[in-house]
Image (tube, rainbow, N blue to C red; front, side):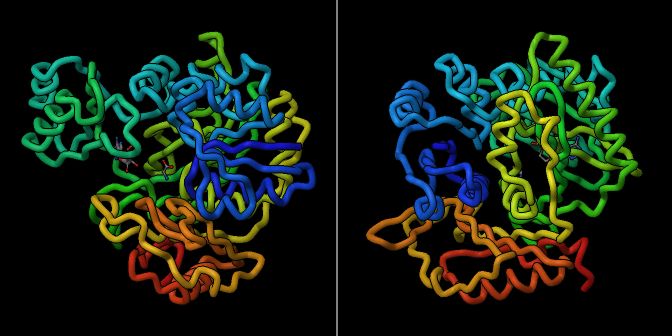
Length: 421
Ligand code: AMP
Ligand code: GLY
């Protein structure tokens, strides 16, 4: 069958690669893709916010299944739009995507359905928000309600920083702001928990720990993710049961109660405090780089999984996983997450020898004059699977050394919690 993937990051390259392994897939299109996907799919330079052009292309080329990678088109209703034209799409609809599109939508569900989460208040003006601060203790968390790609969240240690955060949000730093969210600070360890759903049943889809800060030792600014490992060191059967029972099930019930359902990947960003899960946020897609870490462990045909979701038959499929450990280190352009130069050539890529358990997934790369150049902040994802995290890390370190790219940097300590010094 002919399959299309929307997106251009490491997550989409990983999805593309897994679909490429499938006997069911005859042709792959990536919108717009990157230099990595161009080797295994046809990259189509279309604006992914232009749903009509996408739809025309999909119908014209008779693409039979479309996978949506990133959140923005999902939140803007791409699934509802394409389905109207009879196109099979994997991803949640516009209403369900509010779980990521509006933090307040999710918080209201948490309140109504007793889902454990940080205590919170929603304020529609600076005065009341600042007044609330006076009665609160710090650290405290201030969030914009908009989609802000991991930005738009301030962890404030004092009132001065909190007042400034509230002002920046209402001044429109993350787009027009009607409300600001103020949350209790949760002190624990984070975990990314994934499920896949066809709208009727769900299956687990792995766990991971992301490293969001730019510098070693979890210091510096927040990023999209500098690396990850899977499975999370925190997961146990008991914790998994709590997450499904206290967080995932009531959320799906809440969606059913408002007359909709959830089809696609659902990513719960959790804080684990004393072995109890608290929901920090939902994302209506796979994580990036968690996806690049998790998918190489999949032993079941990903195309069949996606198809079963589109056909409401997920319960008929048994999803199998490798028991190995997986680690991913992200190579970034110098300067990320602030300003960085673009179109810097990445040499030596072809010199890296990858074993069958090693992968390089491209993110912000493009091909110019037969050369691979960096065009984004996060550039390449180095992934390795092994019996032990420490060996996966060794493989990756070797590959990064072989590449020896002067245009970029990476965190040296990815996985430090699961690798003994
Ligand atoms: P979010 O975009 O809501 O996931 O927030 C980004 C990051 O901020 C999270 O990954 C956490 O590290 C941190 N964070 C968000 N909310 C809280 C909270 N209530 N308590 C502690 N840390 C938080
Ligand atoms: N790795 C964090 C995210 O995908 O949102």
